[in-house]
Length: 111
Length: 111
Image 1 (cartoon, each protein chain N blue to C red):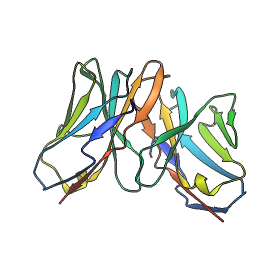
Image 2 (cartoon, rainbow over the protein chains, first blue to last red):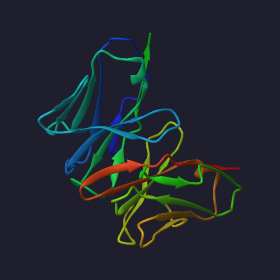
Image 3 (cartoon, chains in turn red, orange):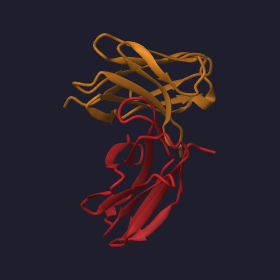
Image 4 (cartoon, one colour):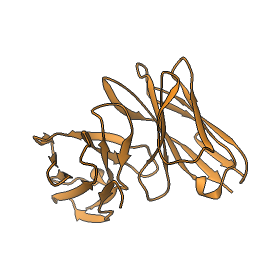
């Protein structure tokens, strides 16, 4: 079993839709959590950190459930430009050290 | 722009050859991590360098080695290349106060 697991999708949604991705992690000692976005053939870029209290950045909301060891990302009012692969990332420390990436969930937003 | 710089951007090598990839970290970052990303998968942690020493290592064979220089730049060396080493190699720099910033990667093809 992989340390970080994501539904690979693809998720194909119309513009304006709300879409949610989940990610589970197996190491209960994990300390920090992130969502990254990766466009085709480009490097991953940090989308947002994920906190226990949940956090929101515009149309994006991230949640962490430590008891169930999963992380979620909600995208509201999807735009064409949201089409990308979304990577869930888990780190055993609050900074530095090895980050473990999921294999990503692919989202395609269609007109 | 003082982002992460990787070279070369693309490389084609023959099985059995050796390759060296280079990374210059973002200004102010002192830690360099290397990842391998195969097609359709998330980045896999190779190793991390801090203060010119390998601080952590993932599940990669000894054919993969690295180095960090006093100016924090880093090299990834791969010996005895296999076809399965074909991938996007990503360098990420970070510091205690700042999370990962990825370079745009080196795309290695082994034929």
